[in-house]
Amino acid sequence: MRCVPECAIEVHGLRKSYGEFEAVRGIDFEVRRGEVFGLLGPNGAGKTTTVEILEGYRARSEGTVSVLGFDPGGRSRALRARVGIVLQSTGLYRHIRVREAVAHFGAMYPHPRDVDEVVELTGLAGKEDALARTLSGGQLRRLDLALALVGDPELIFLDEPTTGFDPAARRNAWDTIRSLKQLGKTVLLTTHYLDEAQALADRVAIIKDGRILIEGAPQELGADGGPARYRVAYRNGDGSVNERQTDDPTTLLHELTGAALARGERLEGLSVTRPTLEDVYLELTSKEPAGG
Ligand SMILES: Nc1ncnc2c1ncn2[C@@H]1O[C@H](COP(=O)(O)OP(=O)(O)OP(=O)(O)O)[C@@H](O)[C@H]1O
Ligand SMILES: [Mg+2]
Image 1 (cartoon, rainbow, N blue to C red):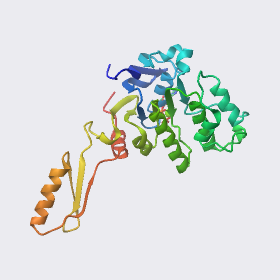
Image 2: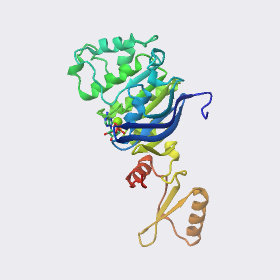
Image 3: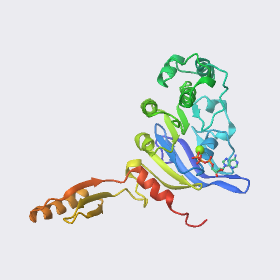
């Protein structure tokens, strides 16, 4: 096992078919305890299918899965008491008030958090007595997050938790997720916001057509599977852009700037950048599958 001392989640050879259609085609990954792990990929890639298998909501077709040492297919109460879940689409009963809903969910866990603290944390203060059906889309999503956190779970599944959030609410949710990490919780997050993944995830896996294309720390991923290379760019005298790629920008800059200074020139518009997670994601996911 690669996790020390033990993995929160282990997935090996996972497959899931819906009738003839194979949505997940043999994936492997591990999530370490205390880690924020991001599952990224286009619509229909198989993210929710994978996450809901780990949550015990869907049955797998093949492979082995372990969540906090349990097979989630067994839907054990002991496991459920340690896990919090934000589903991609929730069927929350609409005629319940915010505080009632949070308290009700908390009561299902052995050591729930304080209801008002969770309401405050998720930005629902002032809406405690509002009926769920009267909340805005973003407020309803905050309630979903509150319900996932109130049980003080050690593992939290967040399937596109910030969809519909305004920019400030998204930042607040990021702070909440960071504070979960500081408390030593493990988070499995799916998101289409690559800045969110870059900001929060220790590691990400990019999945497409039911297969993992690449996995690693977001700031270190390169589209070719290796680490992202630095891009050094500057303008030539005629205004055209000269771009070089390197693993060692210090040496390359020294050479380029040394030669320019020796010629009595400046390198106009000199910049050193690394591809963002979004650059890598778009390059990888826009490619046609290589057969199969
Ligand atoms: N219950 C189901 N029955 C049949 N097909 C399904 C079912 N659930 C999902 N699928 C199919 O499996 C594939 C993967 O769906 P999934 O919901 O896992 O994707 P996703 O990566 O979560 O996408 P999104 O980013 O849109 O949420 C899709 O092609 C979808 O149509
Ligand atoms: Mg999904």
